[in-house]
Amino acid sequence: MKYFLDSAKLDEIKTAFETFGIDGVTTNPRHIMASGKPFRRAIGDIAAWVKTEGLEGADRFPVSVEIDPHLDTAEGMIAAARDIAGLCGNFVIKIPATPEGITAARKLEAEGIRTNVTLIFSPAQAILPAKNGSLFVSPFIGWKEQNGEDCRRYIRDIVEIYKNYGFYGKTQIICAAVRTPKQIVDCAVAGADIVTAGLDVYRDSMRHAYTTQGIGVFTEAWDATAKE
Image (tube, rainbow, N blue to C red; front, side, top):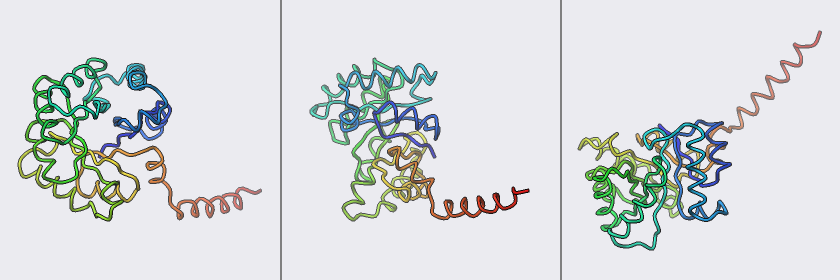
């Protein structure tokens, strides 16, 4: 399973890459806003960092960038996607899971512009992006579970559908809006290709009370035996 960082803050991206070896980045308008930078500057800074690290290429280190959510026609989405994709070879264009979005994603993939169909909330929404060859599909987890839904079956269904029809591994499943270590585990057990989460979620996934307790026990033993 790959780990992507869900953030547009360059300091978080650097830390996550250096500490946890993240495999890519996902952004959205809220992350851009949280970075405190204008859209073009925020994605430009990420593109410059990618180049500095020698990570060029969407196949090597994909960076998902969302188009203007005001756009509601395939033609408008395609024009915006071409503009953003031309800025950096790592950029994968996030397209909404709507009829117009699916049309746009299909045409963009035919042009060689890789797409991430986002805001997926049902297995039915995940089928057409895979059929049309999108690089990624992003089923959301946190929003659904926040409203009382258990997402384990939802992700398993998408995985099983993809395996049934040869989509699995070709269109990669990014579990998005992942907010807890448990959700990471649920997605991994279901067979998702990728999870994308904030830096604190990955940090929390490596914390456990027994680990802390064990370090304390072994530290006391070490100190006792180290005395001469």
